[in-house]
Length: 271
Image (cartoon, rainbow, N blue to C red; front, top):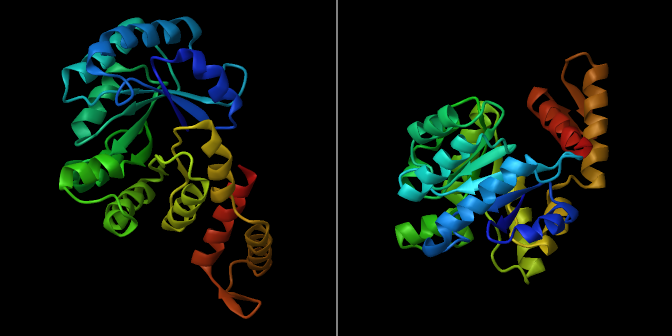
C-alpha cells in the first residue's frame, strides 16, 4: 500500500501505475493543520465523484483519517459519512481502543473495511482488543516512529521488536493481515530490503510505502523465493499423499504445523 498526500490527488495515476496493491490517500501526517479542512473537502469530493481510485482493476483505494480522539479525525469521519463515500478501506490513525474502531464501523458504509494503525503505547497495549473490535477490520499496521516519539526511545530494530511481535500475534489470533511501517529513507534501497527481510519472518504480510520506488523492493522481499515454493510444494504433496500421517521429507519430520506453514507459502506465491 502506497501513501499519497491528500493535497496531491494529481499523483494518483502514478500510484496506480506503481505496482502497489493499493493507495492510501492521507489526511493525517502529510497535511498541515492549516490545510486540513480544505484538503478534506477536496478528498471527499474526489471519492464522492469517482468512488474508487482505479475501478477497473483489483487495486485497494483507502483514505487515512486523523485519529478519532481529535476534532479533525471526527470531522473526517463525519464528512465521509455525510457524503456517502465508499472507498475500499479507511485507515484509522493512532488507534487506542476498540471503541474508536466501533465508532468508525457505525458511521461508514458496511462495504468499507478498516485498517488500524498501532502506533502509540496504548495502541500496543490494547492491540488484541482492537483486532477483535469489528469484523470490518482487515489489517493492523505498525507505526514505530510515533511509538518511539511517545516513549522517548529510538526507532531501532531491537527497540521495536517486542511491539512489532505483539501486533503480529494479535493479528494472527483473529486472522488479520499485519502490515509493517513505512521505511522513511526512501533513497536507501538496501536499508528497505533489509527491514523487509527482518519483518517477514515475524509474520508480517507486507509493508507500507511512501515512494513508488519502494514498491518493487517490498513486493520482491515479501514474496516467497523459488526455493521456498518448491520445498513447500514437496511438503504439501508428501503430506497429502500420506493422508494426514507424519511423513519424512529430506530427513525432516513433517507434521501438521509444518504442513500448514507450507500451505501458507503456496498461498502467498499464488497471490
